[in-house]
Amino acid sequence: MTTQTLLKHIVKQGERWDHLAYYYYGNALEYARIVQANPHIAFCEVLPTGAEVYIPVLTVKPTDNADMPPWLSGGSN
Image 1: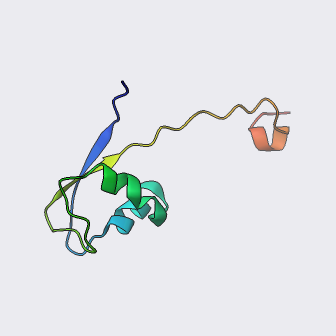
Image 2: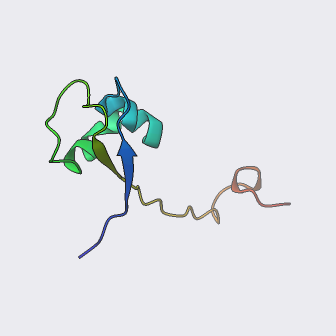
């Protein structure tokens, strides 16, 4: 069983699911993962001010730069 790391965010007035997705992930369309992590909050257009919203931390895999040209891999040639 994998445990997912979560950040806690306290909602400010006027914040929405897509605003949080854009702030934390850089993509407003990623809001579904935040909604799924917060079953205690009804799906609504504007989040309730002061509510605790949990933001799943994304796992990023390191890139293997071995097959990339030197000018893209960061190597010094």
